[in-house]
Amino acid sequence: MVANGPVFRLLPRLDDDVAFYWTSGADGVLRLLRCHACGFFIHPPGPVCPRCLSRDLGPEEVSGRGHVETFTVNYQQWIPGSDPYIIAWVSIDEQPDVRLTTNLVDAGPDAVYCGMPVRVVFEQNEDVWIPLFTPITEGAS
Amino acid sequence: MSPALTEEPLERRAIISGVGQSEVGRRLGRSDLDLTVEAGLRAIEDAGLTRDDIDGLSTYPGMGAGTGGFAGPTSPEVQDAMGLSLNWHDGGGEGAGQMRAVISASLAVAAGLARHVLVYRTVTEGTAQGTGGRQGIGGGVGGGGGGGGGHVPRFGGFMQWPLPYGAVSAANWLAMVAQRRMHEFGLTREQLGAIAINNRANAGLNPKAIYRDPMTMDDYLAARMITTPLCLFDCDAPCDGATAVIVSHRDVAGDLDHPAVHINAVGTALRGRPSWDQFDDITTMAARDAGASMWERTELTPTDVDTAQLYDGFSILAITWIEALGFCGRGESGPFVEGGAAIARDGVLPLNTAGGQLSGGRLHGFGLIHEACVQLRGEGGERQVVRPGGRPVEVAAVANGGGPIAGTMLLTRGIR
Image (cartoon, rainbow over all chains, first blue to last red; front, side, top):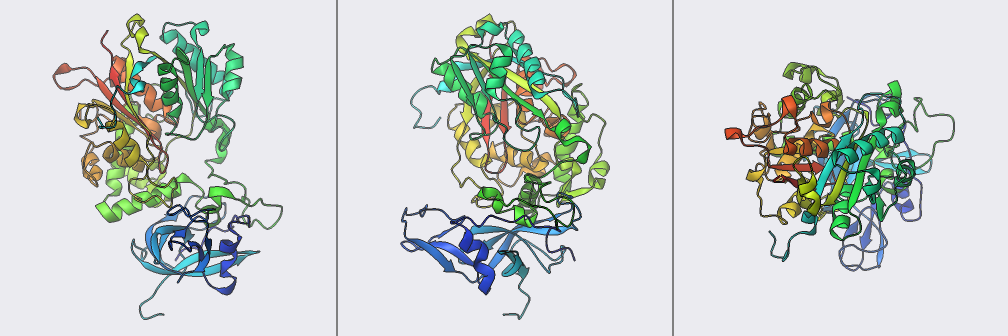
């Protein structure tokens, strides 16, 4: 087993365009900005849909399920005192070209693989709910 | 050439008439401006020019961008230090990789905005990092372990996405590129190691290289892990040094006392999303687009290339560039480099003949441009590539950048 992330998390500013994303986990649900005109999920959030150019956008719930596109086990002491931790790019099942940079938690580094199904969990740090992902185990909901 | 291109590419009106490099070392303790002037004056002399002939100035990235020692001096500082009177000047960190400064200079010369442009890239990352080691982007901010006390700034912009996860370095992001290539194409650590070992062997013949002792596969595999699957020897060597080139109009090519280096084509495209984690194809990223766009601007083909100087800030980037420039098929670069024969100086594609950034030092793209010119001019000494049948190096491909940042140039040897 490895750590669930660096010993210390640098946090995002809750700027107007991203505050919904970084606080979405307060009720345990992941939300992404979505275009109401064409249905495209826009990440990172922007002022306009890059596909159809509509400005009719708003945060929408997603299932929180995704797949590990790729990952790395970090050993370098960028943030001193950290134990090894897993960084991943996870694709979102509703729209797999949306990828979230994240940590995999409660995951053994030797058990992780590209294509592994995962689900979101949140870790609260101050006023930020950091989306993390954990393996979906057989038979679990 | 692309059907869209109905006339000769404008960059072909430009040549690299001179090259110059400062002292290069791990920690020189000299100022970035001092190193830049040294490289600049050498390049001017090499081109057979004087300071007063220089009427253009260009650099990457300028204006204090990045972590300590990364940016080098600004163009106004260099202009003032060297007493230059300029008709055109440019500096910036957005564009087709580090070589964007050379590409824009070539277009300025073609447009008649300047006759002779001094282009430089200077790093003092070795001195700036001191003995504390390499930091991530934004790294050090949360240092000190627990992070319990004191005010820690928060982040906006693109770094807000990786920083909370300790994904603070391009090493992490490119490790994920490598891992994905292992999944899709069966890339192995030994194939990554072939890049590191090749570059180390070449660095042994480059007196300015940072790391010159021979490296074996056992050495490579035993190195400490940075971020799987990348180990220490997959990461380039921070250093101090300045590299300069003079970009001139091709009508002065005949005045040089050495073969001119012609700019045949440049590759500048970024057709996917400009993002590390959102780019459509993790295994290629922007190298795919820059490489494709370069070949659309020339009648030369990958088989014409005599040496490739491909960005190796991390070994995986050279792996990616080999495919992006068409030297092998998609997914085939691992087997292509395995064992090292194909990329050795006497191989089908002599690669990073001065040691690249992995062993030559992280001169950030411009060391590779410099070496392409050296090889085209036949001035490589012990490490000079000679092609089958004794033919000289006539075509060199240079690539800069990684992830969503990419630029390429195809350079050719002028006929004296």
